[in-house]
Each structure stands twice: as structure tokens, then as C-alpha cells.
Length: 215
Image 1 (cartoon, one colour):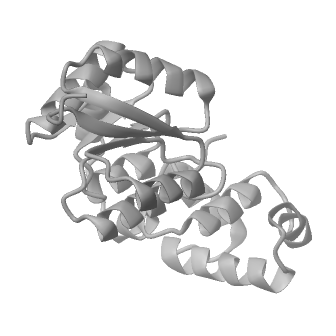
Image 2 (cartoon, rainbow, N blue to C red):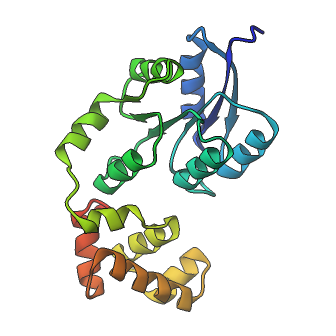
């Protein structure tokens, strides 16, 4: 294999997505080896054994937040080239993606050509954001501390918040997430503080208005 060709790591828990991206990458002359991982842990194990020139990942993985995985990649190599490929178009997600310093963002609604453009741009030292992502981000300016705090929510806090929005009580959420009721109550308090809510009803309303949860 030509030593000038790059090693790429694909991280997604959907087999069809992995195969689709692999097919696109095969058509890019600069791409050499492509490895795949279906979980954050599998990705970390591969990264520990093999240097990759480019990582393409989803932010929703079965065992680890994609944002946490980006943090791991950046801690190992501050210059790591990262493309996020996601279906999530919620307002809070758009802003959090803009803040995390990745090299390109492609929404899964984008076509194959845009993914190819993104890879070629990143390999050329540039950034790339798909057209739909740019349109959404242009429509959603930052509106103060609530949105900034929203970006700081942990994955577990998001899990709890979504369960609250679905009407689950503390005991039910504890059972769903395999946590103690005390831990769930702690998450509730942190969520109310971060989003500036005075009660659960207001918390859900704010989460919906910010696009953190949908109804």
C-alpha cells in the first residue's frame, strides 16, 4: 500500500451506515486502510493500537457519548482530524457541535457527495460543514447563558432530562438507567440549576424550547 495513503477510522453502531461510508471512502484516492468500530470502547481499543489520520464518528454511540470520544481523541492528539456524521439536528446539538472543535460536520440527511467533499477538505487542512448544518446554525444564534449552560449538560443529565420529559418519575428513571434514586435526584437538581428552572414543569418547557428534547 502507498505510504502516502491515510488510515481512516469509522465509528458508528449502524452496519448500513458503516458500509455506506466505506463505499464512499473507497472512491477517494488518498484513502488507504479503513477500519470500523461499532462502539466507543471498540474505537478506543483500536486507537490505542493503531494511529489513524482521520476519524469519522457518530455522536450517539451505545456505550459512550460521541462528545466524550472526541475529547479522548483530542487528548491523545490535539491535531486529530475529526469528522462528525450525525442525524441530530436539535438546536442544542448544533451549538455543542460548533463548540467541540471538529474539522467537519455532516448531517446524515446530506448526500454522499457532501461527505466526499468533507473528507477532501479536511485532508487539505480545511474545515467543512454541510449545507443543511450551515443553514440551521445561521438560523439559531446564541441567546445567552441558558444555551451556553445547555451545552454543558453531561450525557447522563441528558438521559435523565429526556426521561423526565417523557413523564417518568424518579423511581422509574432510576430503574431505566440502573442508578439510585438519590443519584437521579442529584441530576434533577443540577438540571434545574443549569437551565434556570424553578420546577419540573418549567424544566421540561425550557428543554423543549431549546431543542434539547422534542415532543
